[in-house]
Image (cartoon, rainbow, N blue to C red; front, side):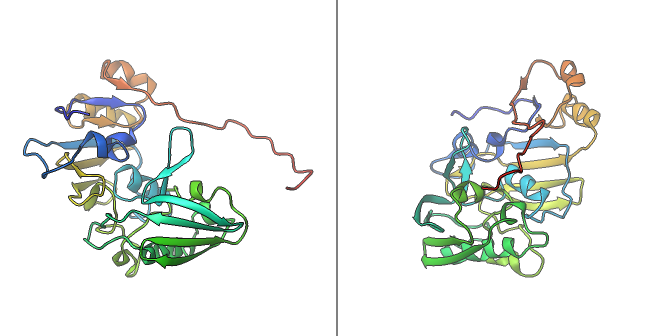
Length: 278
């Protein structure tokens, strides 16, 4: 995808492809460093961090959307597991899976991704309080096979483990993140590093030059947390941000035609039959 000057874009749903995922194809260079003409993407988000960017709650989603953290897998458009920090996986037993890791991944602090690091990250998530919901009904025993292969044994048979490990609440972080309170600053693997935070007001991110999918062509990200929808619309209309997340229907006319709409799955009502157990 050709790199083009940024235009102000209002979106009803923040497109993760602008910041993570497809950022490696839309904003990354195969050779060389960040272009001199690269721009800083300014984003308005409605939900500020609630736990000072701790990765095991709602803030894990923020970190993932901003391209700071990554998990072993991700989900494709059909909901099937796809490679992320792991390139391949095999079920080698009823309760055992093996995951092959990318060999060219470096954390923001320059250290290399290893199977031992995966063990440390998943063990920290499993011992968090409260534990991430993805691990609430299963326990993991993570054992490095070699530097680039990790074996994960589950407490019960779990055919959905690759999907489970795609959760933004199960990021793989550098060892430095676990020195006291878990801190993702300087410890992620994503295309952008969280380098400046201003409480619940905003954050600054710089490109990760050693990103495994290519150096981002964006010069950085500037995030403003604006819970009031009218404030996000006003910031967009004033040219203060390029991207506004969750533009309300009542404001669509005020932001013009430059809109991108992305449908999201939603469960309205679920009936469960509890007469028989699986």
